[in-house]
Image (cartoon, rainbow, N blue to C red):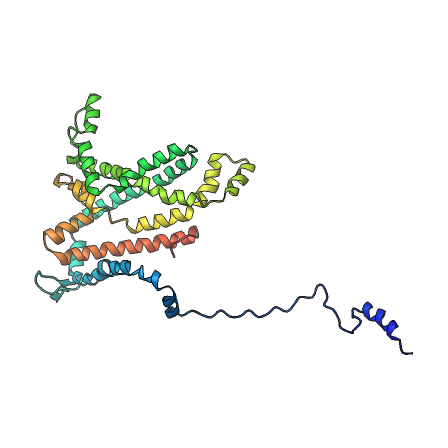
Length: 340
């Protein structure tokens, strides 16, 4: 027997259909996602036309790197060619690896290379961790006036030229300088520090610490501000003291910055500052003070043996490249942080 309209409506609603016959969507049924419109790819011409003012700011740095960094790399060819003054800038004749064999068999080069490694190692071991320590100490200071005063005093030597720094070091370590005055006041004898080869490394590293440590804290202080304060609060709840907070929260927070700067320092490991060494050393301190950069100056410019000096410089650059790549690989494998 057919049902009337009034009888069909309750049964249809019981089955989930409305009075007009349409079935409503179930609460748990997922709506079909709409296809997102594909973003139009911007070509480099469109990007340049849009932001050409910003790209023009890179013109001067690019010209600088092309002229003073990449352009001179072409001159490395004279490491394998004989260069004579007045001849071709790319050398007159091909000599192969003759100049490389010369410095490999030269005892003077290896003595200079050893001095460079020792001086670079001392500089890195001493100067790299001290900015981290100073940044952590300044981060714990709560008196703003004292903190700014310490920062200003520690940053100031960075803005002084190398000539002024060396002049101050010479005045302090001269026979009648401040250091010898303190030594003689305690009954000791004045020491000619700059004429003693055994004192050169200590003087150089000490001046590097004084000049660079304060400036190096800027990056670490900036990295410290990026650490979430909730991590310190969680550490306090767990009962961690200030030392534990520093070890488990602060140092991991600035680890990427530490690793990046360490890799960059390793890359310049053999590039011990030429200016400071050149101004501080003398023939009496060649035994410990003569490094690759000063040796290249004497061989290349003073003795006018540019091909031989270029071969040594190319060897030094290759060692730096290998050290950077190795440090970056080891850092990526062990800590997960690297430059690339």
